[in-house]
Length: 110
Length: 180
Image 1 (tube, each protein chain N blue to C red):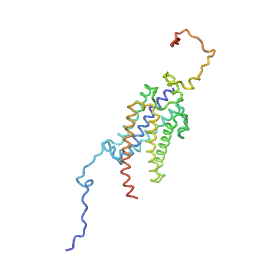
Image 2: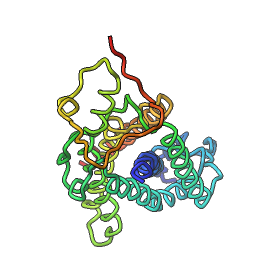
Image 3: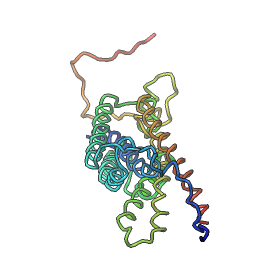
Image 4: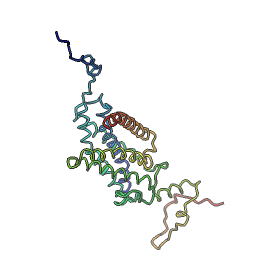
């Protein structure tokens, strides 16, 4: 009677054995994911457009072109005006005429 | 009209950010099971291969709107060469780098059959750098990120992608060591 030379089989892995826990993937098909991603992008675009139109001038925006920065600085009143704002002059030409309409601003004098 | 382009640039910038988040997340998901609750790996991979069709229109709209917006003062050269603008050089330059990298990743993916697998993988990994530069660009220059809600959503998506990127690296390192 020859001795059994077959090596013993390795133990079944808990991950691959018959008693493993099955991980089921979600049921959404590829086309559903595509539609959802397009809808998500369009929703963000639409919401962003609505938000931008109602918040045109964000004073605490991290980046502002020089023209916008000068305007917001001079409009605050407390901050000193930029050199560009102080040196700017308006030249009145013959095309500028007086009006009979009531003034919308007033100049206070002491 | 200038205001319209300004609003369009802001909205399309947000849309491009979301589209790129979807592209990066679906690229990470098959290895990390990040979207396992939602769909099979095959479906997620199909979406990832398709995402250029949402990234390109959003990014293109953002760039064209900024070119047409006279106040933004962005030139065609600024879209290719970073740090050339007259203001916000770092913030806008990061956006230029991000755009360049996205173009490289998309074009090399379309030319994948002409490249070796290793070369394509190395070029495709530039998308991580592209996402980081885009996130920094949005933080440093995004007007709408002054809103706490939009900022919170941007940070949350970036943190999620950062987490899954680290998980992906953590899984890949032992395999790379075993091969070496």
